[in-house]
Structure formats: structure tokens, C-alpha cells
Length: 198
Image (tube, rainbow, N blue to C red; front, side, top):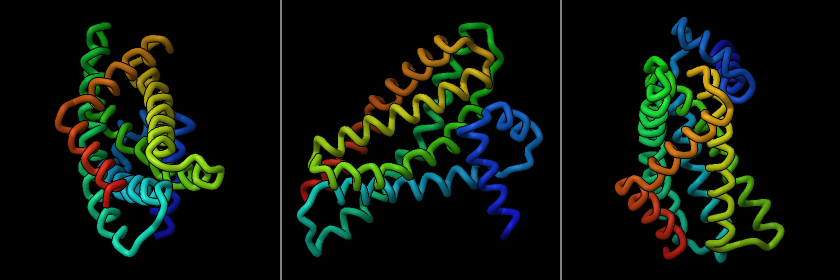
């Protein structure tokens, strides 16, 4: 158990502090990236559901069902997001004559999903300063996607050996396209709005 906990800190360190270390560890296949990605996705999905419920008072006895439903909906979205995101970035990077590394990008995106665990604390801070409702939740969500874009663009820069401007541009295109992908967008917005109506 202790080794798994230390490995978890290494995984988080690779995602946020040293993408070069992620590349080395990924090539050695010493860490179960998919397993950690699933753990981060479920925790992030729960954080998204709780944060959205918390920022939109009043709280009633029926708010548990939307949290459970939103957790499953968010989990479905967060599982698909890195796959689509990594594939799109890989497509853009291959236009610059880089080798394909879609699976590595997917695994890096899965690990970077741990950022979304900060959504509930951000919503709590916004609710404490009086920025509540749909506007507060939307602001927190845009903030989280901005952080995700920043972390993923750093990873893309080192994984594909790109310039900063190319990495940010490709990450922005890929995140925009994957967010507005009709299935993801409609399914996610349905769960997001459902949180406010139930």
C-alpha cells in the first residue's frame, strides 16, 4: 500500500512538475497509467458533481440523486475526453512531421484529469465570496479547463518536442474541438443543467 501511495505522488509529480519524467516512466511501462487515470476520473467526476451542487444553494433533501447522476455523467465524459483530446493533438502534431504518440498523450491526459479534483474547492471559495449559481459554476469550469489546457500543453510540448506556441495552439484546438464534439457537449451540458433544476 505504501508503494502505491508513493507511486501516486510520482504520477502527480510527472503530470504537473516534470513531463520529461512522465515520458521516461511511460516508456519503461512501470506504472499502470490506465488505472490511475480511472481513479482520477472518478474522483474528478465526484468533485465536479459536488462543486456544482454546492455552488447553487438552497440545498434540499433531493440533491443527492443529482450528485450521483452527475457523477456518472461526468465520469463518462472524463473517460472519453483524454482519448479524443490526445488523438486530435496527435493529428495536429503529425502535420509537423512528428511521430504518432496518441496513446502517450491519452495517458498524460488521463493523469492530468486530477486537476478537476480542485473544482469543488474552487466552488466552495466562490460560494463563500458570494459568486454563486450558474455564473459561478461556469466561471469555475472555465478556470478548470484553462488549467487543464495549460498542463496538457506543457506535456504536449515535451512529448512531441514542439515550440511553446505550437503546443498551446494545438492544445487549444484539440480542447475546443473535443469540448464541442456533439455527444460530449450535449451529454455533459444535460448533466450540468440537471444539477441546477433538480
